[in-house]
Image (cartoon, rainbow, N blue to C red; front, side, top):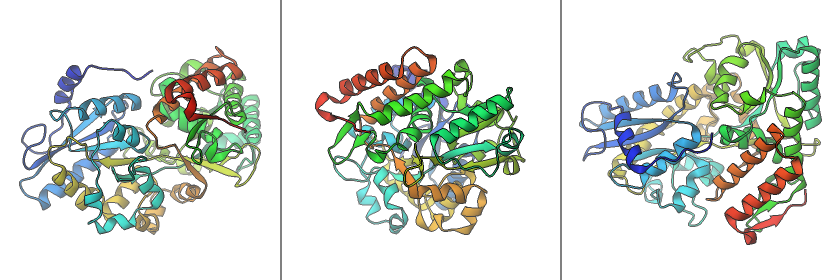
Length: 459
């Protein structure tokens, strides 16, 4: 599904109906109240963040009598959420006081004038020193170097595999592929030995949004020899087009879907497929491998809609290998979310107080990262044994941070990401060859950023 555009008027009316108030009072901001907007996935049965935020509101309002925090969940696909919060932030009438931002979109929202710099606050906040430099970089404006958010978490990505299915297929576990070819060989073995099992899930197409771009494509692209320069060359400040690495990554996607190694195309290109993977295909033993994120245990915990207690003994984890096993031998992608204060917020000071004294304390950050199976961005939390042991896979995914990559934090990234998804979809469906899809991607990027902002890649 492409990003759905809605009119500002229609969305304003819909937002008013969506407000969940904590305590009595208006649904927006008043002198002692704030409005907090966050994303509720279309899989509305997952109330993990809603439950956590409600506990944070209770903690804050008890410590600050007379204050109110109104939580506003925006139920939408990921791409639609981005569109909707931008619509909200355009007007003082609808702008929240605190908004949950994908760090990849922060610079585009800065460019749109939607966010308030927070340097005056962070300069006086002792806890700011605990945040990892990479996490700080993800919320720093590329143009002005100012801080526009407080990171809430990060994540890494690898390969989840079903150990029982691998053993049935004759693949030795624990399993750690050294090259892309090893991954494809394992998928082919599963296909031959277990015909009723989908060998490999590789997110693809426009409906998947960033899941397609990050888990599906960039996990491949950043594992090519060009590495961090495979999509954007920071030294020349130009987007990379015409690279061999891009075509190689597209060829991997084409191989998966043309050889029947992935999900059925109509399923893979459907809306909200990630929920199906996490709550049905993996727990039911219908999928052998899934290139996915550190957060996957959220689907299986005791608080999930469909708990799966056996996952710890059934599922294994492996690092995504580089293309040919070249150093450092493995690769990952990291993103994450942050809390930002909109430029047109009515009560930024109260929003900051809620953020700094409640949401982002060491204790509450550790609780959230543990419950949400996300990777800590605070150094004191990342070293906490309780956090590392909270989810059995936390240690594995935290160690991948050493070899991870981050998406270019630039306003044009969203358009480039969409171009990636289009290229993936065209080779998945067979509507275009790898060469043609790559050419279309190059043209889309040049149209989005300008010919002078692109450079020909070499690998």
